[in-house]
Length: 184
Image 1 (cartoon, rainbow, N blue to C red):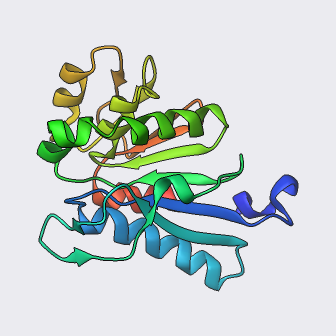
Image 2: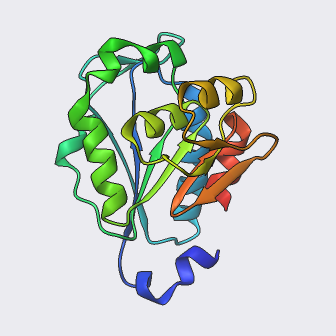
């Protein structure tokens, strides 16, 4: 895998950090997560971590998630990745989520620090709320592309692609495309 052969990363462990949201779609997390654990089994110099802003987490299907580190405790380097798996879009649009200003500013600051930012499915809405997608090409699940464009008219939402890259931000469509993005 070319990403691990890059000379600037040769001796440095790359962090893959998943932002776990309330009502997360389990497959949006599990697919890409498994890709990185397989890469570790093949000798990739990466470390997978998880963070959130909430102590009260469960998947959209109700599976509880416990003991997740607060996002503000994670230190990033420029060769690290933040991945935002999809969650229930109604939750992402909720006032409860949009009041997480510290989280949204944190994402924007990571982007400014040259951390690679990725989303799976409705995770693109989180990136849009943070402002990092302003003026950029992006994608999301095919059922949500029109909604993403309508809610954020300053984005250029691309349809019928597995994933898209624009200025160190990667957005992917639905569940399986998150696996494709992780493999990329």
